[in-house]
Amino acid sequence: MPDPTADDPDEAAREATRYQLRFQSLFDAGRAYAFPCDAAGQVRMDGLGEHELNSYLYARALVGRDFAVPRVYARRRPC
Image (cartoon, rainbow, N blue to C red):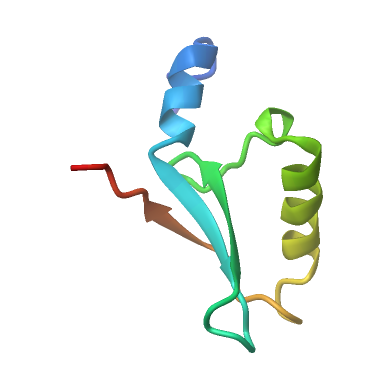
C-alpha cells in the first residue's frame, strides 16, 4: 500500500510528531532514548539534528546489549 505521506513532507512531519520510538535501557528503568517516528516506527533521520542522529544510531546499534528492542508509543497530547 502506498504511503500517503510520501508526497507531502508537511504531512510526514505531522505524522512524526504523533508517535515516538522508545529504546528502553535493559539495566536502568529510568534510562531511555525516544525519537519522533510514524505509526510504523520509521524515524526520519534527515529530520534529526546531529546530536539526536548520533543518539539514535547509538541506541539502534546497542539493541540487545544495552537497550531493549524499541517500541512505538503514541505521544501524549497536551490538555
